Length: 370
Image 1 (cartoon, rainbow, N blue to C red):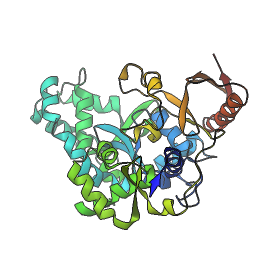
Image 2 (image 1 turned 180 degrees about the horizontal axis):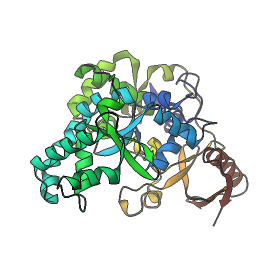
Image 3 (image 1 turned 120 degrees about the horizontal axis):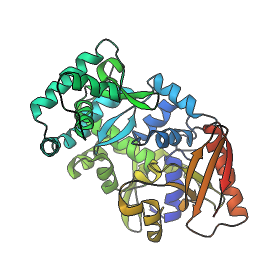
Image 4 (image 1 turned 45 degrees about the horizontal axis):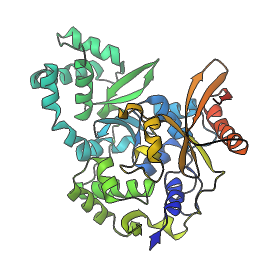
């Protein structure tokens, strides 16, 4: 079966839970359902990560999502590519063991650059384990103070690396903020009943969740997102089996949830507008973003190509603007920067889309155009 690029965009929007779909699971109802469906969600920037949930959960507020995180429906850690993601709490262990372990291979070189020894990293884990044992929860600065109190140098990037390393090894995970700071807990205490699949099952699970939550897309995109080897990516797809359908787009082989293909949604219309955070899976879920972003707009979305993604406005599946927000006591001041001409009805549709975001942050929207 051959799909057109516009059909792919419609299917992806449904896969990513950004529109209701008769075959792709429809709208999710809670944080646990969203993160389990997608497998993992970029969460390096907390505010962006929260709105990634909000964009998929109409009627939810940021406070609702944070409360769900306190209930441990999801947690933050570094499951792959050395980048913070939300993951289903019970799956954190096996995701770290399957994908995060590859990043650990470069940890020794980074420690050498920072002037840290492996012995120091092990000692830091012992200190943090003791400080948090028994249900403890410390802010990032409190964790660093505990390390410093035992004579471990946390200056520069050393402290961050030691917290990352302890999390990558499965000792810690990131709990909801204490005030404006990250907080850390012991992963085994925060999640006392982890799921522990065999390796093949784990590969099949992450393959199913990736393609179910982002398809149609390629095996190359899957390997890039997970950081798995090409061989492991191929094995995961094989284990997922008939749950995935294989089709082509412009002659290229892609995969998607077989159930979604059975009741394929229509391509997105020009009045279908999304306002997404900078690190949403709509862009971060793919190595090849050419269907969603025109080449001439990439520099505006990732200024300086530094890995920092701007928040985007998406119309008919394509990025048409970026946006920034400033939160005041009662207002969300939103500055939109169009990348294509937007006038009249187009602007009205964009402003309506921002109403959901404003409800999420419990503010009155104030949209400004250049």
